[in-house]
Image (cartoon, rainbow, N blue to C red; front, side, top):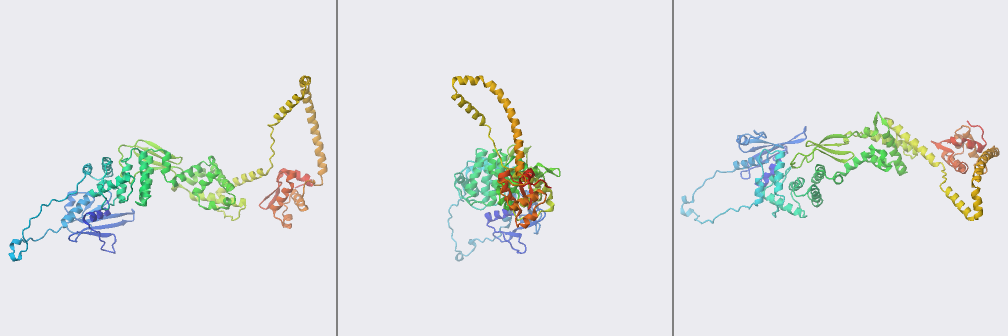
Length: 633
């Protein structure tokens, strides 16, 4: 119980306003008697910096004998006030509202002014007695009629030491008893308390609540005190007013849409409702597809991204890159590696993570280094709900996704998941920063990043991806010649059919007789022809070599500068002086020579890397023959 509940009770029942009399002590206040104006309660609040909670006490003028009559651990001698009529009350989770309210009623009764003097009119002279006997009508006090159902509900309440279990059991019994009750009385008064139940409401408030609930069930949403609205949520979470767990979840969603989304209640109620609906899905074992729609989308996306990064080889580049972005800052999206060529940039970043995940660093995989392992901790569902568990929950496991699961053992719940506290964000961001820096230099994007010495451990993973990409680029530039041999057999069969259709009957018989002999001759001829072609090819090559030696083929168009540059490279020089003297860029020179020789050689012969020119080893002999060079260093 809190002090705010006592002040609300005093204001509602006795119209007593809390008074703050000392500006220098804003945490202290008093409640005064409505007739005499004297103090009957001194309220004190103190902030405990060690526990982060407020300590609340009250000195109440209700008679010292109350200590012995009620004998509760939270009752003691007064803290600030003096006299035999004062006691002190400590407010907390074990403080009973009923006892405190009874003590306050006693303080009001003790403070009433009973002393007065009565003088009968008969003792006065007649001339001074203006009063005459007057017959009074019969007076019958008007009492509010209590609905019988409410009266029976109150009798169900079991009094005793107010513990969490007893309070939840009382609420559940009364809620089941009142689940079909309807009323039409308006709500009156105010209500502000934690974990509200029917027992915290006055008779008028009970009728007002059930009237409000009647309209809610018909789809007519009206505002009510927030504490009273929580009672409706607690009813549904206890299965009151719903046929099945699925129906209960449906009605909780309808309440959110019709009440909270309409602007009633407060933001904290919406946060609580979402959390309780998630916990309800697990406790009741609702389908995983239903739970995934209820659970926090941000948490679900984080779990999905973690699963992708844990098994990157099973996902495409787009998925891996999006998972990296989920835990990275926005700089990776703004990198020129991505903005200049999104598809290639995403592939390179994804390959860096795949390569790092496939290898180990410090005997641990990169995912574990960056995100740790799944951990198990105790889970407390419905921690702030008046919820009654009728039986011990059965042992079971609820798997939400590949990264998060819940388990119940002997009534104790646990959750297993990746914890943010285990994430090594510096290591993860270091890998992405170094990858961004090296990829910018490799792709020559400009706006280079400064490499960090502490992230050098990532360089081997990144350089391996860059080397593989270089080889893939060179291989993609090679011309591809594809010969489809599948149609040759069909052509031969068509030719045979055409030949047979042109033969007469006699010619067809002669052809059949000569098939075997022709087949033998064909094999012998094929052998002789193969030898002849081998000799002929050798002669052709010798002739071509003699023809090309010392001159350039007429099919090749090279200017003198390009010829000089190629011969210089064949001799082992890098040709930088020639390029510099000609005021040319090495990359431009390489492109022009490759274009000129493409028809002759059919591939890239000159490569420019970091403004240095080099020849492809596979085509050095061809260039020597083409340019008449016989020696190269």
